[in-house]
Length: 358
Image (cartoon, rainbow, N blue to C red; front, side, top):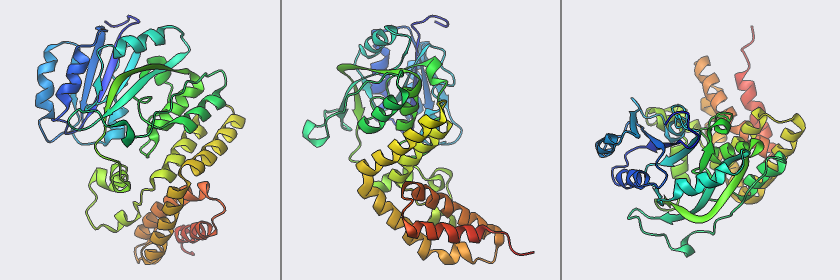
């Protein structure tokens, strides 16, 4: 298979998916496009995920990798292309289902133009029982295509049009994917990943329902906090004073994911400035109510815990706490530079980090 232009490498991020991973792998095994390899990345599952995957390994196209510890879903997805040998890469969750012609249809579009870097298809939502979620329970998909001849317009289209993750779970040209920055451990990191691709390659769309993405209830803010919490990921002791400052602000962080990506992207400084302004204005328009609530909650955390970050006897502890909170406040301040309370909290945190007088 290696070296042929039709090899597709699928990378599956899995954690405790004993209920669904077998159905997912079977939908891959019966693909009409046969020239593929499948890498399953088991994120230290504690259930029967590994045992269910094992029979598929008799098909030499399937490979199983188990992480020694749980590295978080985002970092597990970043492993997807590390071992890929094909010219085309498809990341997947271990609970989604592909139609048999999924790879064939996407590859057909990818072959048409070497400038095509990502091809996605229309999706449907399914529940835990693999039944369709009624249309009236979710918003219609926003379908879009982009052309990298105008990178600013292409990236802005992604920012303004993104709604469901079927684009992230599309087919990538590996040579383009390897140029991208890793997905960030922030809410919206998958969108920023696709947004950067739009700077360098075309995004194309197949208007047919070819992938079924599983929805486990409606996402809640509390779930997002846990999903993107370093304390949760690394098992910080419950009740630790450090966990008080791990206030994850999903939609402010979403904006920050764009801004970090843009700052390091391979485009001109003028384009970076334009896109940064578009990112902030778009996010404030789409998620302004949520972000305002997140800013208010952050200010309450700062005030309520001032005794911890400003006056503990241990200098190192004070600096670590103040630095952790300052990281959160500075992200919010970039989005809302006219917020005087944020500016004042930034100044006080910076003062807490200042070295003691000689």
